Length: 357
Ligand code: EPU
Image 1 (cartoon, rainbow, N blue to C red):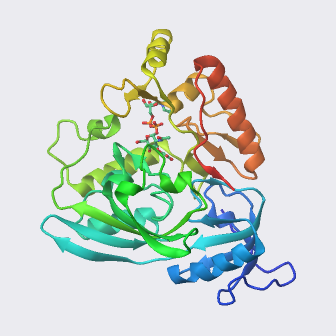
Image 2: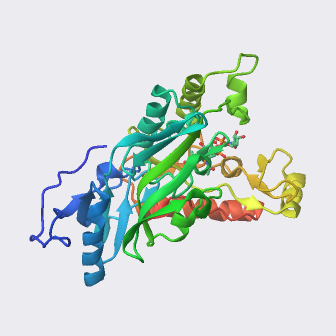
Image 3: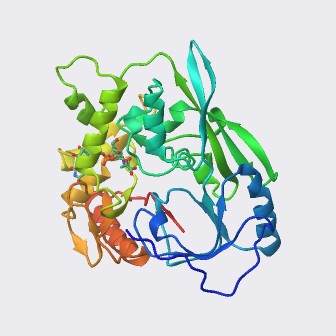
């Protein structure tokens, strides 16, 4: 993916904050993993939490629309993003507390997620290895509560530092108040309330590998208990086998969420489709099941299908890809075709996972 040059092309507009440089008509092509051509009308690189207040003041005064962009790995960008785009570039990671029971690490929202996972392992701090190689930034991770191979990031978060757009102040939100559930959180539910600036992780000293997920269990079948590094390497191998590298083929990971259905609907579906792949969901006894959307889409015959510049990845039907030259409209049109077919076949509604800007 080559980024278009970010030379100013429109008459100079004044910066909203007075302090920060405003980047006009800023190309986001290299900042979204679909590789869509997208121009941010006014972009600001945020490198310090203290800068946010002044920019938000300007936004409030002008009434311009706005959004925050992290790694751009879970978004579908329109060709033009009106108003203000905040580029979350706060970096740095420090161990802020350590004792016999565990370690607290404070990490800037703009840090690359996978680099951070490798950093923890380099520092002898296991826990996040199942979440290796997930694209995106640390600040975006809690928003959709990233999860893979039986682990969700919310389990390892102690608290979150964020700019609260209501009180106009930096606040600390305890993990217990973040409403983490499958691919959801307080932040996803209230997209214009909080701007995450730092995440405080808590990694307990007591550790054992988490290998419940079938692919991972198979990788270590008949072997000694692996180290966290070995789990990380196995996770990277599995991901590389199934998921396209956004540097080579534009994509936003899973394009749909795995739908959760009630027990009765699950049992009826199982009768009709005995090979249906699903997992228990939520409290034991609720009977709820999470269905593998990838399996359903595959079963409908979409794997590897192309629709012009976009398509369905050949090794994982849950992932839509941009072969080059695609855009938000083309990928959403393909998504609609898939949603309709899955609805007709299984009576299940697929929700789109990435956020549309
Ligand atoms: N399957 C098919 N055909 C396909 C795709 C999947 O038959 O084309 C079957 C697989 O064989 C497997 C089941 O469906 O039995 C589930 O597939 P997979 O193990 O690949 O996981 P997933 O449910 O499709 C979820 C997450 C991924 C995460 C993996 C591993 C969601 C929306 N996706 O995918 O997350 O990496 O589990 O934990 O929950 C992401 O969010 O971007 C992402 C990649």
